[in-house]
Image (cartoon, rainbow, N blue to C red; front, side):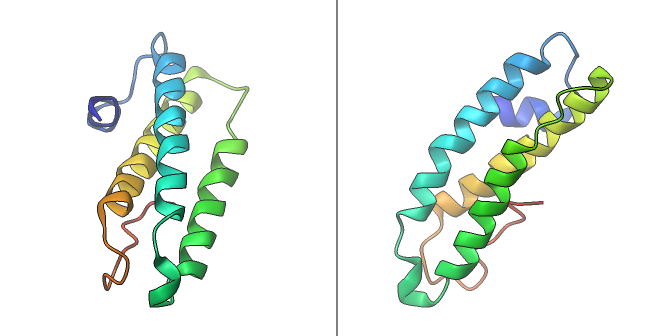
Length: 105
């Protein structure tokens, strides 16, 4: 997850933002099914997980396509925050009191 750390540490350069976005999208697309496959329903957390994953997918589908390069750089940072939250969820056990670390922020 060095891509996440690098992107969170500073605003990415415009020249590298497309590569970062591609990697972050890939991380997120791999993490979402892992999170959804866990046994959240046994603990009454399935609705929350569905809402959060739908929100993340919506954010991926509403990527800014136009505007200054800084808009895409800020979007990359947003995806890095989402990715970090999703990783925490992927590692969390269902039933944990607060399984939702700002994944869809």
